[in-house]
Length: 193
Image (cartoon, rainbow, N blue to C red; front, side, top):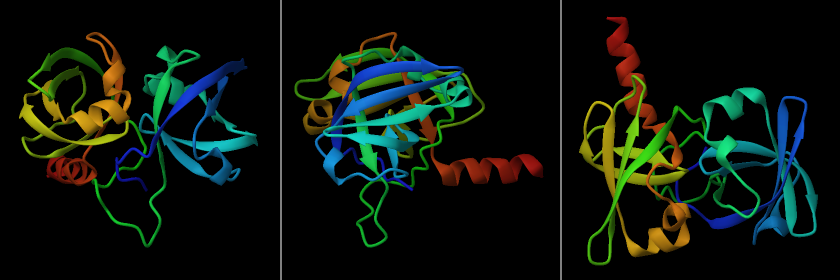
């Protein structure tokens, strides 16, 4: 389980296809603390460390993951948000994040507001957002400001803007979206009635 509080930015060093899988090699400040088989959220996608070499580690994405996330748009040199799993004795600073992407969204607008930013995202799925509810965008736990059927906005403070991939996002970019797990369960229960 994750919280959506980004620890560090990693940088993609190598992308190596193998059959229908793709291996991503990433450098990160905490690589020396990692272990093989450890789960790490990469822009919100839970991936398993399969090898470690000095300050770089490798994860493998299978076809299912590649088809349901924005990973296909990743390039060598891109920064990615990284978060290790929450320790059992850790603080719960964000919200419950599983690392399972629900859908790919698209950044539809970016507005600077004198020191903070408003990001707007479109998506096509049956998932929903609620104003003042939680949403995970590229692994970052955020609060929904405006909520519509297929669109929502979030406000981003300078610290989050600078220390996550938000500073490199452009209008039209794909993003990974994970909707609030509690909301998903409530919606599923109501649908069964």
